[in-house]
Amino acid sequence: MTSPTNATASDGYGATTPLAREIADLTRRRIALADLVLPHPPSTRILTVANQKGGVGKTTTTVNLAAALARAGLRVVVIDLDPQGNASTALGIPHQGDVPSVYDVLVAETPIDDVIQQSPESANLYCVPSTIHLAGAEIELVSLVAREQRLGRALAQYFEEVAEPVDYVFIDCPPSLGLLTINAFVAAREVLIPIQCEYYALEGLSQLLENIGLVSRHLNPELVVSTILLTMFDPRTNLANQVAADVREHFPTEVLGAVIPRSVRISEAPSYGQTVVAYDLNSAGAISYREAAAEIAQRGAPRPEGDRH
Image 1 (cartoon, rainbow, N blue to C red):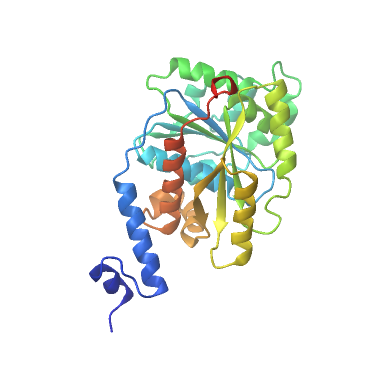
Image 2: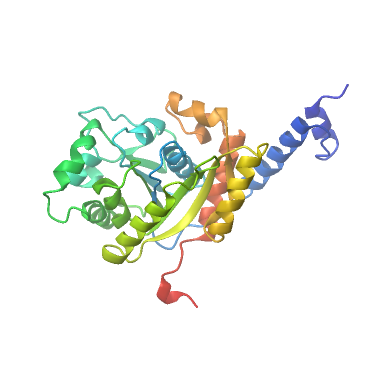
């Protein structure tokens, strides 16, 4: 009896079983990614990854998109603005309490260059870590001058002083709409929203969009929701397919074609202090994140309203 793998290899992807078809599909996608050369953006793209609903794959999306772009030769910085520090952990960055962190950048105006660390995954991947001190930053920021703009100013200073230009900055937010998230919105030009393909997927999204609109009107007129990524997708369920269809209907231009599947490998990777791109490059999860990163790079940043025709 011919095994699915042999059938796939011998008949030009003419797979005959579900497993063989899946292997064939992953092989095609992996080959397509190997030939891709991603463009460098003309200027640094700053994306805040936000969703006030927890458990949607926000941090996972942040670190894996960053890792995928870095692997493609682009220079990427992740700013871990979540007091839990999960992005720092996934990138293999030490973030115990005595480590200089984004807390020092926000509260003490420490330059980013003094706290940024290179991820062991890639020479192109950097992280401004979070520590437990960030949990108190919301309260401390209230009394500070220009409290909503401190991260944006720190990034502007960093871009002026850094030796090599940065292609992408991804800001991982806490699942709340406090001053940390507002700082992220003010610092960014784009918002990326991961949406879980499950029941209540759109719950809270209108509130998030309303808050993004407020920030855009009053603090950062350049801010737009440029990207929506469907995560935890299981094509075998009617619910996941219905949620995906609903999101695409509501946001036809923002939703990426790439979809992130439910994946054991994606879940396992952080426990090894790695992204899934480093942990298992050829897994379905890693390939999906690499496809999403490529799509973001190829789409480019949205043009300002005044430049649109």
